[in-house]
Length: 227
Image 1 (cartoon, rainbow, N blue to C red):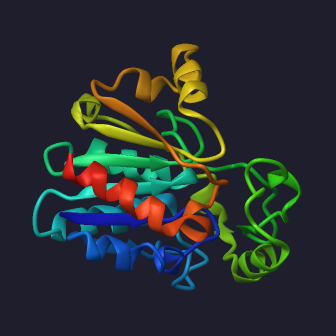
Image 2 (cartoon, rainbow, N blue to C red; image 1 turned 60 degrees about the horizontal axis):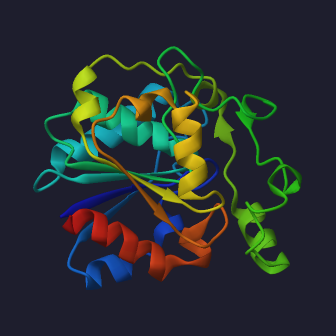
């Protein structure tokens, strides 16, 4: 199966470098996606540009692909299911949940000079970064790509309710499946609450398992594809 891999904020396609070989060994065709404005130097990129890039990868896949979104890019994966419900075989969300229609995509931190730079590790203290040592933190922070303002503040638009028929796997790193189910039951994840088929899978890691548990993450993704 073609497996489209979309990393979260401040990351480009190289975030999956340690996951890709294991997915290939397990018989899949991983396709890491570098998003406009997050690795190609296009600081003027918009959320619509990023969605278009993901959809182009969906359309060019050899068969019905599985779309994997990490963190804020869980929304991009869900937007792909919304735009191509007949083409997307499954959506995998790693450490994130889909945004709601009419809400900003990722307006989480301060915009400076037209971009949202990585804010440092302060906001991610605790379970998010507990499995990253200081060297890894320095490496990730130095490689972080500022997110264009029109991506961070872009408005999510969902239009096709057939997206709720697309199976979803939620990979739970810094939170547990039980917590995710509680949030969904409490109405905090309305898009997933309407989905017909949602599965939760635990992984004992922080928010960036592609760096700290790449082999285990690859096996989880491969199992989702096989199912």
